[in-house]
Amino acid sequence: MIPPGRFFCADAARERDDPFAGTAPYGTVWVLIEFRRGWPANGYDGLALDPGTKALVYSAAQAHRARILLVRRHGRRRPDDGGRWAVLRHDGFGGLRQRWGAWHRDEDLARIAAALDAPGEPGLPPVVLVCAHGTHDTCCAVRGRPVGAVLSGRWPDLVWECTHVGGDRFAANVVVVPDGVYYGNLDARSAVTVVEEHLADRIHADHLRGYTTLRPPQQAAVAGLLGRFGPASRYAYDVIGTVRDQQGWRVRVGYRADRARGFDVEVRARRTPPHRLTCRGPADSSALVYDVTSIRDDRI
Image (cartoon, helix red, strand yellow):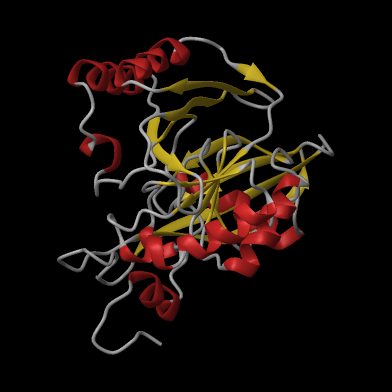
């Protein structure tokens, strides 16, 4: 139940049973900047960095359509300046690359621009991001920080807390990059199971918001297949084509384990009634929801 006198968007979303398949924002490149001091509500945009360096990193990220996230390890640490930075890239099937560096002065961050133009190193373990951006949305801290604590205790080298990733009402949100997989509606117990299964290359539908390499109807289609047929590898399903019609989308999906097998997944979109969707949101708004209406299994 929602506590009397106080609004929490994640509690409200759970009471409404808001669907979340198809809500992962599209993207294939991420810039991570370790920042141990307090995070502004607008993340990187609000940092008081050297203006020239800040603009250079921002324009380079825009050119590559990269998302900039501030990160930190869970727990209290000295608020020293500097830390690590990373550029993580998903270049398609198997094309997962990372480049890491360190910064002590603002000007050191200029190296991010060059790293965005470089291919990066393959074969590194994924990064697990937990949104804990409380100055952006209360639920991200209330639900995100306990998840960050338990995941950091289990995988201290992989897990970082991060700034806003989108979908505050689905907190706690976890994003695995550069795999490009969004999970939501997590708590301390379910987060451990989800990450454990992800690291074993078994993606479940239960908490899956979507793959960032796909568009929302395609994300919903793959989530529908995982829900129907059970957990599978991150790359078990290939979206071969998507056709838009008056009713919605028909998403054609191939199955890597059996090239002769394929699926036609029908997806429809609908608008929800207006609700307050974030803790700080001043007005009600509707959300776009993607429903899988049919799955046809055949042979290609």
